[in-house]
Image (cartoon, rainbow, N blue to C red; front, side, top):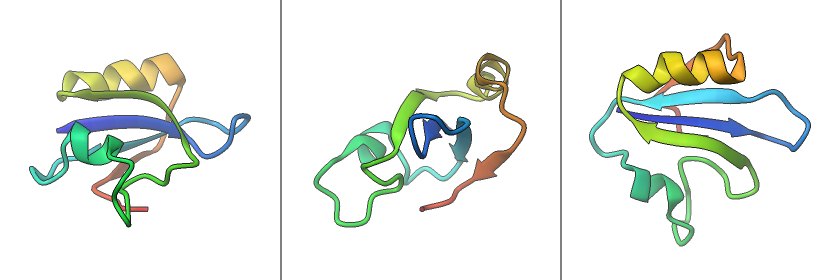
Length: 73
């Protein structure tokens, strides 16, 4: 399980996406050479990590109310 917190713009609220499928790894998300990345290059990555415990930790840290699961933007 990979947890990513990102912002679409510098002043926007942070959002969280959780990838539960095994094909999504941190290396795949951070790879800049992909034609269609999981998260667009111009979005700002706040936090990224592996584990179920990070979902609640990042929710409290960034005050996130909505969680998105397995979405490729």
